[in-house]
Amino acid sequence: MANDSTALPSSQEIIAEFERYVVPNYRRYPVALVRGENSWIWDAEGHRYLDFFPGWGCNLLGHCPPRVVEAVRDQVGRLIHVPNTWYMEAQGRFAAALSERSFGGQAFFCNSGAEANEAAIKLARAWGHARGKYKIVTMEGGFHGRTFASLTATAQPKYHEGFEPMVPGFVYTKYDDLAAVADAIDAQTAAVMLEPIQGEGGVKIPSPEFLPALRKLCDDRGVLLILDEVQTGMGRTGTWFAYQHFGITPDVLTCAKALASGIAAGVMMARTEVAAALKPGMHASTFGGNPIACRAGLATVETIEDEGLLERGAEIGERFRKHFEAFRREMPEMIGDIRIQGVMIGLDLTFDAAKIVSECLSRRLLINATHGHVVRLLPALTISDEQIDQGCAILGDVLREAQP
Ligand SMILES: Cc1ncc(COP(=O)(O)O)c(C=O)c1O
Image (tube, rainbow, N blue to C red; front, side):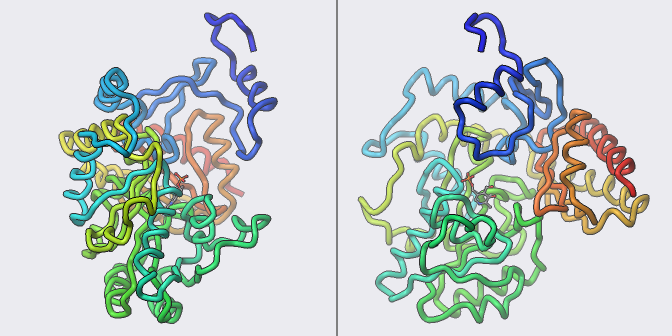
């Protein structure tokens, strides 16, 4: 790369450095991004893209939301890091903010979704230890992360291949199938763990009865209910947490992605009586709950509330639904299910969606495909109606041109 610090490197130069020095464990698009504002993002050559998938769901308030930027700037000038051997105001306030908006429990902070799930799994093991319970039941098609226990919890063989043997004590069953879950639970089961809406699995929304019935089943069998809200949490679905659509509360909940608007942060929330199973020294995270992440998280909560963004999330979802229903009327042979809850959006195609993603990229619209044939959008709560219409017009053209 050019050594002149005033010259901005091109995408090609940035990519060349990656090829030499960065482990090639990701499939990346050949674009280097340099700046963002709300639902717009720019590459190193100055091209502007409309982002329907900002930060893989982390940038729920869009790129560089002003209050979050301000809170982070202020905090880095005061204290960058405070270890968890000390108290700090921001962590306590953020824990209170999350507790008040969920089920009144306590928070353990970490830095990612997988770490939050590791904490939940360890808590379930610690809680189950005295009760002779250690097994965790998880759902096929679910996704919980890439560290070893969260990877084992991810009941998708393609992610396990090459890493076996996996962690013992996990049992897999069918999502949205109460009888199958009931069969999978035995006297040694400590917890049932699942995403209330499967994200990576294709934006799968369960039938309305499933979660309430699962809550009752867990209570009847003396088993913890752990909800992985890494992707659905923090307002993504139009409520603070997705479980709030279903009239239940979990015993343990995990959240990351949007938690601090894109600053690395994860949290495990647990009912206070359950959280008591983790005693001092049993679990820890050096960076977890650091003041920068907690200030960013608090600014996220304030922005969502002051700007009425939970309500806006539902409106955005409905606007996408109208566009997608029009696509389906026009191209019924190409479009299956439309699955939308707030700004968690899935459009099931009858063919592989990868080509649609690359065609949209060439027209400067950023989207995602998951589970092979599902177009997944996780737009920002701050996206405008005009941006939605503009992006959907591009997506519509791309689908039309892909028609056999
Ligand atoms: C539901 C769910 N759980 C866990 C994870 C893992 O999160 P992270 O990549 O922050 O470890 C993800 C990531 O996509 C996710 O969608």
